[in-house]
Length: 312
Ligand code: GLU
Image (cartoon, rainbow, N blue to C red):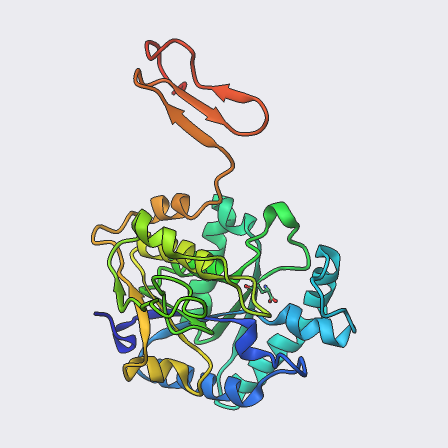
């Protein structure tokens, strides 16, 4: 099984519920300080570290006196604009205390679906790591509209891991792994130590539960695992709500490890696999393909498999 110290390049995803106090809406500075000590320790071991951090909406909503109920898209975007400055500032100060430099990277879904922008993001992350900075990535919530947003940082973190060629991704969560059922509701639920392959049975076990501040639930974590493992990256889900959660994982804290696929897809294929599907392609017995994208199905050919499928 993988251990944290094996990682050459590690992406750590930090959920809002860990970073922002649910009651006061303020930043949990002690927890962040301990996390950054883990980052320092990892870097001393020679591991490249990228952080994918949520928290901008949770921090900003309190400042703007927004309601506790579900926010509209516009309210979330406004909260993110206010909260992101504070979030980045907190990381900057916590890293500077150890002589490290924080780099803010804000991305949208389009930055990974457009190949040129994807290659650009990859080059920038590479350059930042080479220069010794610690990239702090979040979705650019202020400009991402519903159709072009990840919406949750689990999948964003997996995409960042694939983009940056990371060999390990850790999702710091409010649960200590992937369970056969929701442990809050089912006393017979058991945690998997290792998931070797994401089968339809495993997928059926992921419920929809989300915690108070985060957008992601087990479903999005499983989708993240699919993306990461297909890209040759091991992924762990572990309890983040302890001081020094990454060291705790290294010392054997409860977790579920999703193993990277034995035959990792090439980078371009991993990039395609991480895309949000816009339609379906049905291939009939004769090899005729029919892409169903929007309202009108558009078919490659209607000749039952006789002519060439796509030009070129
Ligand atoms: N990008 C959102 C934020 O910073 C969080 C999304 C999520 O909770 O996964 O608040």
